[in-house]
Length: 374
Length: 167
Image (cartoon, rainbow over all chains, first blue to last red; front, side, top):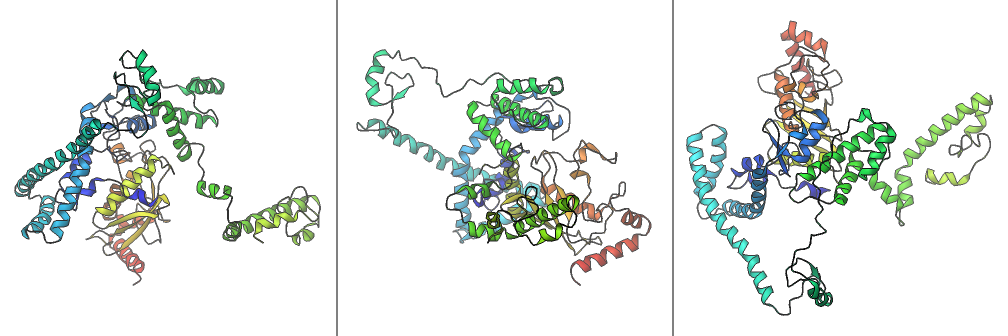
């Protein structure tokens, strides 16, 4: 869990000489999920969000989160240029950031130019104090020189893998990692060496439709839930292939989430398969839907073979004692209401709680004591 | 473990707040195992009777965050303010979802929206400390005192702040 805290963020730029990239990166992030735009779409009011984020918002509230104008998901339009900007920025991010960090480290160690670190620090402050003309100018100059440096580094990085690829092609003994060779007639299929000969005999060189790419293009319509009875709704769920358990409100929430996942996927240039979407629905089910397990990790632990019963029972001693006390109180009340005067005898009976209803009077199962940790 | 949208977004906000904290504000999850429960420290704004005080608050996030807003509650008491319930719960418009307006006075534009953030909430609370809104007081006594007997109100706040600091 702790590693998740080290997520890429616009603040990564702040301690580097490229601190002006922080606001740029911020504008390439969705204000709802704070991540880079994923399948960005434009609302009627010209605000851009991830397709999935805005769909969830609209199905929740029906308004744009930024300006609160009413909008409908049918009116969302793809914003290709933003998607391209995000993709290109993400490609360039790693090399730029590592360069910027190297530079920051060099400057922190004194560098070769002692004036620079001071200037850097002043730059950030100046912008905040609205000393715009000077700061902006020096900032943009610095940006220009920086980005030229970055471009050199990046082009070097881009070339590298190509060189490796060339050398692989020349290599006669080249064996692909997965043992599958591409068809020499370029039909796009890959197969084992043994299967190649029979394949080449029948191959037309035409690209076969790739089975991995699902054609998810039709969108799911919204359902007016109040028009459907439970049975009809469940039938719909079966048609969609999504789980149909749970009460009415859970069913509606699940369907809305599925519709949002599905339709957002339609906005993607590389749509995911239905299987992947179902996996995402399962995550939703576990975190927000009907399958929220508060102690999921504990449940796994208990199921393990080497489960430490001693430790578990001692650490949960209080809980067990409380449960036993509650059960005892309940059974006590029960007995008092049916057999007057019998409660005295029960108090001495240590292990009554597990079966208060069946054996209210006399000794009960000794195995139950285990749960008390003894 | 698969993490939800809410968790990811809270990770982002936490990182942002810890690397680039606004002045007078510290906030983060109490334990990294539970991203839905945060603690925040807010400095009393200058030139107000709250100056010099440090106020601890807990933030609880719903599972569908950021669609729904978190709740915020000052812990340890000692915040005598028209917009803070006697039990510490903060009542300001940014924490109210647009659909529900019990007081019929808040503009939708001031209320919670998924593009708001913990940082914006805490900044709003700081300015709320400086400028109470007595249109819908959460603490009627404090609001009355603020409106009618301002010096007494300010003295009480200062006393609470000093008590809170253990002076």
